[in-house]
Image: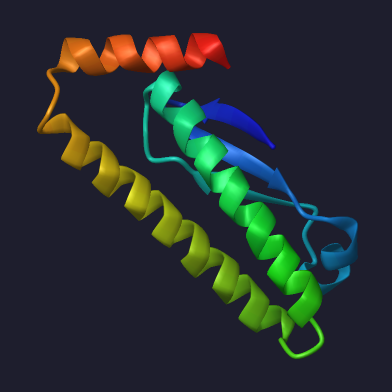
Length: 113
């Protein structure tokens, strides 16, 4: 996994496990993290990676019963839902903190990583 910036927006690049590459016909999946903040991108990328690793495990065990088209659709829906949850959580937290406090907290978390 890597976090890359294209223009002003950060993206997460997730490598497809070798045993799923033949089914998905992809070596990697690139998803927008929907943020221009580096600290927020790191947080979202870590959350996305953790959940996609679980998804890869499910796909490995269920790949016999799913078509490549179904698997691709599942990945798209799953990653979209994860990013929406991240955004919703971030917006809910904004009600409790001012911008300076959030930036300070984000910097501390990034520095600890």
